[in-house]
Amino acid sequence: MPQIIVSPLSRIAEMAVRHRCREMVSLLAKDQSFHRPAVIDASRHLLLGVNDISFAGNDGLVAPQETHVAQVIDFARQWDRSAPLLVHCWMGISRSPAAAAIAALAIAPDQDEMALARRLRAASAYVTPNSRLIEIGDHLLSRNGRLVAAIKAIGRGADADGNMPFVFSPLPEPAVHAG
Image 1 (cartoon, one colour):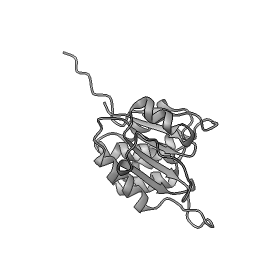
Image 2 (tube, one colour):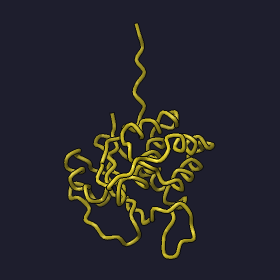
Image 3 (cartoon, helix red, strand yellow):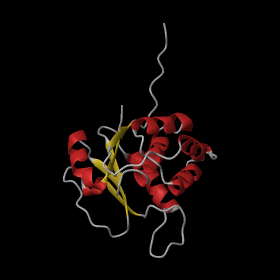
Image 4 (spheres, one colour):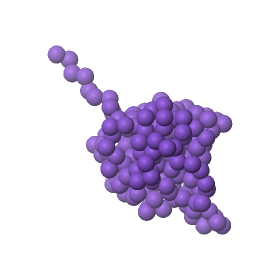
């Protein structure tokens, strides 16, 4: 079963090696410098220059836009799923969990949004997915407000120091049939 590894920037090399990731999505402030782990080929690294804000109009900051979310969706759909996908932002609490939820719906659109949100919360007590990314993802994936409602339903995550990477299953558990 495919996995998405959600990580803060400070732990990406460790997580990439430990989980044998070959593809990565980075959501960081524009022009923020960092080293891509050597196990991630540059051609399979999506770098999005976005700040962790929920509305446009902040001086010098880049709010997530439809083009950013569309790139996450396209990248997720091209992910071969033979190795975990590493998704990270500065702390691994807001932008990257939102991108992980969007990627999960991009690759498995028939799943229930509330079940997905509950899996995200079960994977990490600390996540508070960026509401702007979630709203745009809801729109682009034609979720009709269900993704927004599901993420709101799990509420704000617990306070964290940004050192809490986690493993997220983008697909629901297969149904077990008696018989």
